[in-house]
Length: 444
Image (cartoon, rainbow, N blue to C red; front, side):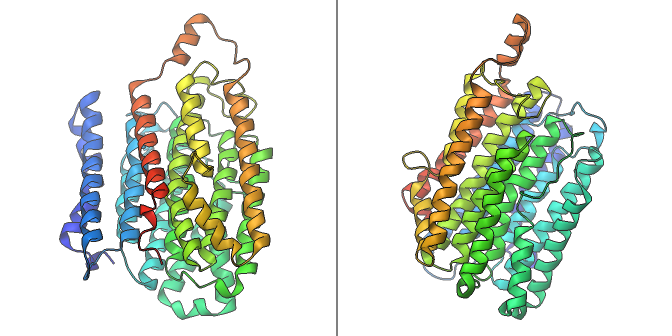
């Protein structure tokens, strides 16, 4: 697949891999941070220029606009993570934590996968991304023993093998059994309702890497897999679309009853992914356009909200929902960032990219009003859950702290402010593009 790309594009995609090479050349501090993010910033700028050039082409365009936008989204997810990752995580086996090279490899590999064209290349690229996720889980589990259950690793392996098999034999997707197996592989990529957490992992550094890989990447990955056959499931939409939406509702139930904060986030992300998959499986132009919007916006909202939660975990060294009750009361910027991430992720009118959510709903409603009602109900259930989390974390009486500890907790580090600001900027930019309709130009 990579051989089909021009040397210029390959050079752009390789830029994030320079970050881990530059990092050891500079002493700790601002120079090291600048050296780390500069290749990624250049990567985003060059991709944006290439996107503008491709959009102006009337014929002979080699790179898919959708693929370029997905690759840009990956870069937008990586940059805030690099700004906030510490040089030496304060955790057991910290020297084994790949704080830079692993997410950079995901961005470069994701770009190669997204820029392939054709059903076989789309599925093959998706399989490659799944195997990168599996590599990430294995490395993180090595740095934090017991981080992932064996079942979770088997789920990733199964989805990767199935996707690779359909890339090699695409005619199998036309069979009812093939469609059912492919749907199962997709649902196993959802972050909920299946459990993959343990009580032993409390490191904020682990949580940052974990949310990048297993909350932010799966929506992009599933859209990539479904790009191979946009109308594949339209003949059996009630069965397959209904199965994905039921899976999302189970995720909302998981979010309501979760013990750990990141499990709650998993459930909310799963609900958004279910609506996205339902829209894509509808095979309608509106459903595809709305699903593409959700694939772009949902990971960025999950990233910003996840960074807020990891900041609270870092300060209080606890990650249970009950333990963090009132933890953000004294930190107004965190409340604002969490509010922005939550409401944007739900795409409420006048708050998020409502045009994208509306198109997705139209695509599902045109084939099944009953499933459309389910999407609307899930949206408002998500809204009530988010308000409950917001009230729990950012109102009431916080943990009892001395005056000095309170000042430390209230103070945000420069890296955190930059990370929150960068993530918010990209999220609002995506929302603006969807609201103006520019994300949907040329959508089938």
